[in-house]
Image (cartoon, rainbow, N blue to C red; front, side, top):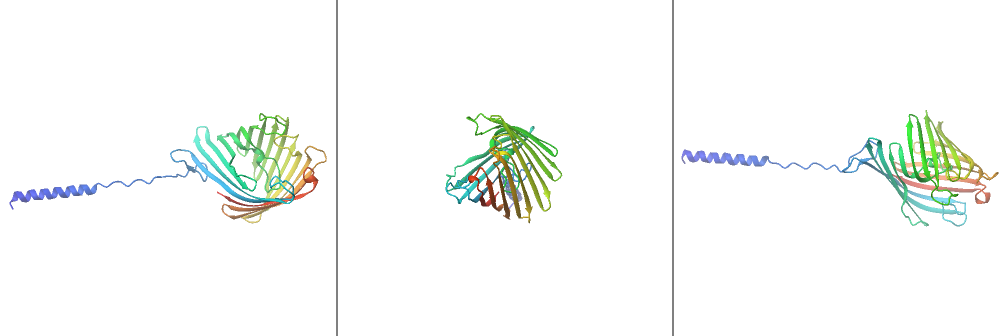
Length: 336
C-alpha cells in the first residue's frame, strides 16, 4: 500500500469517528414535568391555583348523618305524626370558594350546594349560599348576621338566609358592617319587602362582643341583639339578649329573650355545653312566656370526623298546649 492510500484511509477513518461522536452528542431534552396543581397560600390553607389562571380555589364541605327525636307532635325536625317522632336523615354539603388579588382588594365568590336524604325528602340539590365579595363589599344570597349564635344547641336567636348587598370594614379590633336585605315576611303579600341590618363587633382582650340591629321596613318593626363571650375558668361563658319591637323578619318569636351557655373543654377532643334560654311575651302576648334548658356533648373522634349528642327540654306557652317536651339529636359528621 503506497503512502497516498494510507493517508486517505486515515482521513476517512477520522472523519467517520468525528461524525459518529457528533451524532452521539445530540440528545433530546427530557420533557419538563407539568405542574397540574400549584398551592396558593395567599388566602390561607386549602387553596390552589385553577390551572391556567391566577384565581385560587378552595373546596370544602361535609357529610352529616343525624337522627332527630322529639316528644312534640309534628316537630319541624321530624316526620309529621303522633308524639314520639324520630327521623334519620343525611346531608351532603360542598362549598366552592374562589379568590384573586385586584387593585381594589381580594375578589372572591362562594357557591355552596347541599341536599338532604331521608324518608320524606327527594334529595334535590339546593343553593345554600351564592355570593361575591370585593374587599369589604358583598352581594348575593346567604346567611346574614342573625345566623350567628352562642355555643351549644339550646339557643334560638334568629337566623336568616336572604339576598343582600352591603359593606363591612375592620378598624383594628372593631368590625362594622351595614347591609340592605330582601326579606321574607309573614306580613307581606309580595317579594318587594326589604330591611336594613347593621352590626358592630369588637375584641377587647379575650372578651368578644357583637351588637346587631335590624329594621323590617314593611312591618315597621325592628330588633336588636347583643352577644358577649368571655373565657371563664376552664371554659367559655356565652351571654345573649334580644329585644324586638314587634313581629318582624329579623326576630319574630316574642318581645324579648335572654340566653346563656357555658362551653366546658374537658379535653382537647371532648366538650360539654349546658345552656338555658328564657322568652317573655311570646307572640307579643302578655303573660305568655317560655324557657328551654339542655346540654350538648361534642367529641372529635379523629381529624375531620366528629360526633355530637344534644338533649333539650322546652316549656313554652305557645307550643304543645303549654306542656313541656323533650327533643334532641345524635350526629356524625365528616368534614373536609
